[in-house]
Image 1 (cartoon, helix red, strand yellow):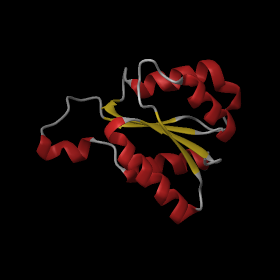
Image 2 (cartoon, one colour):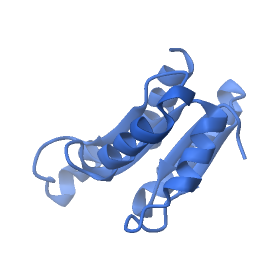
Image 3 (spheres, helix red, strand yellow):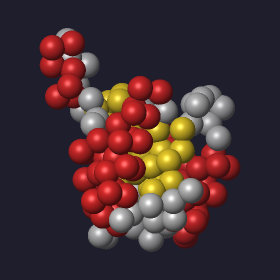
Image 4 (cartoon, helix red, strand yellow):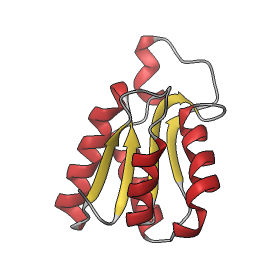
Length: 126
């Protein structure tokens, strides 16, 4: 139950998202609320919206390409329902808009804790 920024993710990206929350707490003293979507259809918008209304900031982490993915949908819904509660621009940490590379290069494509921390710091300093 953090009060400064909401980190939203699901599936395989929960591990780097949780690691980022730990890193933010240890290095910056920032308490992040982490939301595990569990399912993306139906999307639990009420939980997401309630958290973002409390923190005023959000970072959405998704391993899919940036365009047309779950992160884009979460951002769209937050803009529709919670825009006036936002204190800073929403941040997305996603894969690039390219074909997912072979395993040997996968780590350069996938979001990691460092990128999540960087996005959280950007929204906290906006």
